[in-house]
Image (cartoon, rainbow, N blue to C red; front, side, top):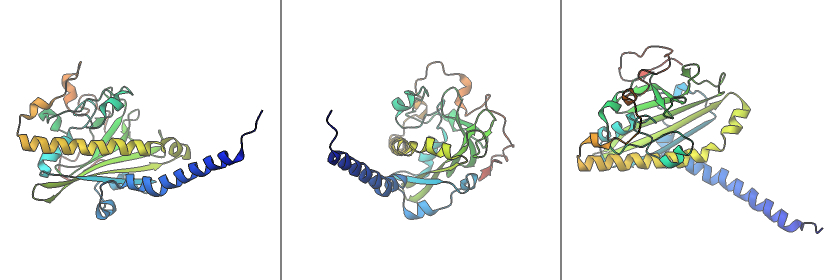
Length: 267
């Protein structure tokens, strides 16, 4: 049996090593700050304190050619049993999530408050709790430990925390900046290893989501068409699923503070 010649093996190892270095030094930093300015990446957003000292913070953004009031309704209606996530539905549905992104704004999906569960799948077995809410400005979601009925914590249960924040601000007449931030913290080394490959997936899905919201907000603002017509067709959808977690939400660790701006939920 002929032994493999060392030269091709060495060359392959060099190429693999170079690719890894290129990803860590060029691709990864680029995808983690896609579209975001320096000040946006450095800014402290409402809800950041929910995941203190994160192992990873990612901030991405886009400019939308319309006013914030036309952008916010698309954000507040996200959820697998509501408006979807405006990303690659077909990819999410390969995992049985049952996501169907809406093409218009649905009035009953505009009602959201701190403590609500935003579902990651139609069954409601996973998702995020609303931990901070400033209407038309900020929505912060924290990974849910649905078995406990509480936001996930790094020192218990799943062993990691994830915060997903949407921040909207007016950049000028008819222009809005939409910033999406992720903060991740791990309580166990194994959790970090398991979640590491999801960084690139997060970029692909979040970029598509940002562009999906941009396209919808600009189109709906320009057309002025009836919002109710944008509901996605969803077989077997119950009447109660129009509100995030309503009627099926796990117990809240603390009551909402009356719906005022800058609402907070105890961790």
